[in-house]
Length: 112
Image (cartoon, rainbow, N blue to C red; front, side):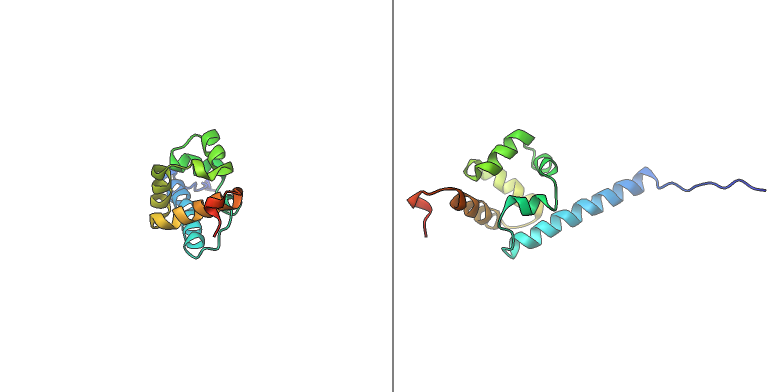
């Protein structure tokens, strides 16, 4: 009687699957931002973890968390990286961040 061998996915196949999941998550966020259906970072973090997003943006987790709590702290460069990561125009991310700033402040500057 012959031996049976289990076929394991190769490391390359695992990497391809991992990249596909990453791409699907980022595309989902992109679609939601472009259609203005996202109204909070929590909705983004339901799709991709806060720590993964910080890593993807090249920001330390604690600095990213601080910026999420006070969106006015995001730099233009960070918003540009966020837009590039998702494949959206800069103004889509800038609008999202500005809306988060407006929601967190009582300043007359941000009233419509």
